Image (tube, rainbow, N blue to C red):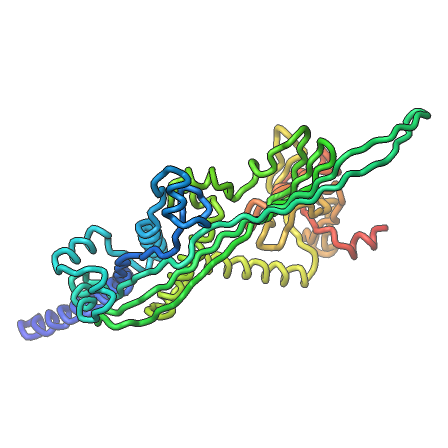
Amino acid sequence: MNRRTFHTTSVYIAAVLLTIVCLMGVTTHHSFGVSKRIAVLYFNDYSQFDSPTGCGCIPGVIGEFISGKKRLWDLEAGFTSLLNRKLETTGVYGSVPQDEILDAMKHLKFSRKDVRKKPDVRKSLAERLQAETLVVGNIRKFGQERARANASQSLRGEQTRQGLQANFLTGVQVLAYVYTARIKLEMEFYGASGKEVAAPQVSAMKKHQLGGAQFAQIQAIATEEGTELNYGLSPRAEKKFRPIVRPGEVSGIAFGSPQYDQTLLGMVTDDVLLQVVKNLRRHVGPDFLLASEIAEREKKRRESRAESSRSKGPIIGTIIHVDAEDRKNAYINVGSDRGVQVQQRFDVYTKGEALKDPATGELLDFIPVKVGKVEVSDVQSDRVSKVNIIEGFGEVKKGDKVREITDRLSTEGK
């Protein structure tokens, strides 16, 4: 290789390497530099929420006077912290730490009033924070209310037992509680130029219903979570039910804590902040899917696939494990992906007589022989379900085939 050829080759290699580096730079920028820096400056609380009572229905000063306590929840700091947390979970938005925001405002000698009224102030602040968007929030409503209704009626009757007749008088009392949590926020989004991008209003509301009937010393309580029977005098109907709604219990929980998320107010807080993030996506960008939306899309995809599978015929699978210690329990290789549900039943078939080609002796198949029946007790994943062997105990084994029992097949078998 002469010097000229060597030089040409070196230039070519250098050009290729430079191209690769440039492509790596572009790829790195799009893969790892996707976070938009969002500065949640502050929230203003206009809700008059009275945290010592835990209900939000008494103005703050009066509530503090009645309860003798100072306010337990700082909603302004709490909502700022929770919105930052929500932004970080997206993987698209990066939040500016509050210490950095406070230091910047102190250094620039800006007040909240300045930020609210002057675009040039917002521009300077965005530049110092290197933020693409500034966010300000106003809490207009925040609270939980409880409505209670009850009705009672005395019943008189008679009962005959062992030939003796006796009169009785008892009372029937119907109770009902409705807890309602409401939050309303007014948001302000500003771009790096300091100009307003959008000013969406978001709100969320949830109700928790609790009702029941008391007949003498027996009380039946029904909520969305289930039904409970209580025996004895004056049972407390609320204590076992979630979400947490009772004012005394709510007021003892730290705002934004994991336990707060279990309260009715906590659930509504999560809903309303999710709407704020969706509005940022809409007005600021970029377009992306939230984790909840991805999960919902995957759920619909599985349901669609299961529906398609059902339209093609019965679900067919295989016994993949039989519990050696409790041989009533087994596992099959079909699950939520095929639309399998708890209490669904399958016939179990094992290999019977072999079917061979008479000319070549080649094994073609086996005649299936029904050996049992299983019922789904738990759908554990998209491809695994736990079943109980309800027929054929001791005969069902790993490798046996299962076939969904449909109404058509059941009718044919009768």
